Each structure stands twice: as structure tokens, then as C-alpha cells.
Image 1 (cartoon, rainbow, N blue to C red):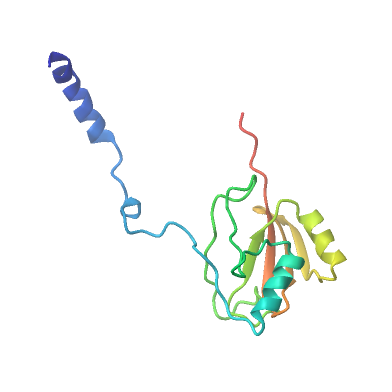
Image 2: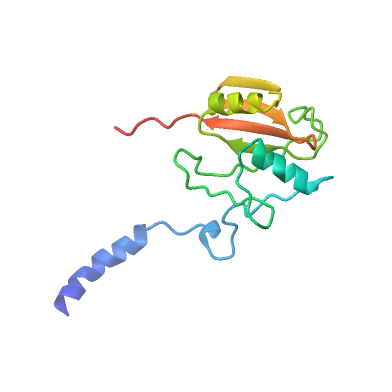
Length: 154
């Protein structure tokens, strides 16, 4: 019992300096994006294009389940709203744009070009990585992003 009593001041000090969890760390919070769902004139044909052209593996139920533990995959899903007047999603008339992370943008674009996909633009100058844009058969703009490599730990 004496040993525990000696530790009580240390335990009290540790409890006093430990960070208080933020509200976002409490149960009842959003943990991530659980899916992206959108309308299509021909959903089966569109998902076949995503499979055949983009190489996205489709599940038996017709959609894709994309894991986020692939080597080099970004550690987060970005969610952001743009103003109504933005031209960033042009030429798409859709209310949204898809962004897919890729491991090698040049190789991926070569594969897309071989399948007849037009690359709208490419930008290798962004501080967060390399980008390119294409449009799917429904007219949805797709942003392809090769994240900037993290510096090697020293």
C-alpha cells in the first residue's frame, strides 16, 4: 500500500497535464467518408467505364469498395465546397467533381490515352502534388492526383 501512496502524486500530476479530449474525439462523430453516390443516365455503362478505363475493381453489387491502406495513398479524404461561380469544375455541368489519388500520374495518363481518353489539362507545379483532369462519359470532371511524396524520415 505504501508504494501506491507514493505514486498518487505522480498519477495526479499526469492526470492534470494530460490533454483533455476534444469534442470531436467523443462517440457520435463522423469518422470518414463512407461512400460517394450519384445519378447517371446509364449506371451500368458508367460503372463499366470506371472499371474498364480507370481500372477500378467493381464488386458483384455493381459499385466499388476502395480501401485506403494502399502504399503511398493519402491519409485523408478531402471534402470541400466551392462557390457557385467557380469555373474549377468546368467543362462539367455536374454539381460535384471526383478526385482519385494515383501512384504514378504519367503512367496512368499513358494508359488512359491508349484507351482514347482526352486529358483536359495537366499540372505538375502544385505544392501538394501532380494533377490532371479528364471527363467521364456522363460529363463529370475527374481530377487525378499524385500526392507529393513525403520526405524520407531521418
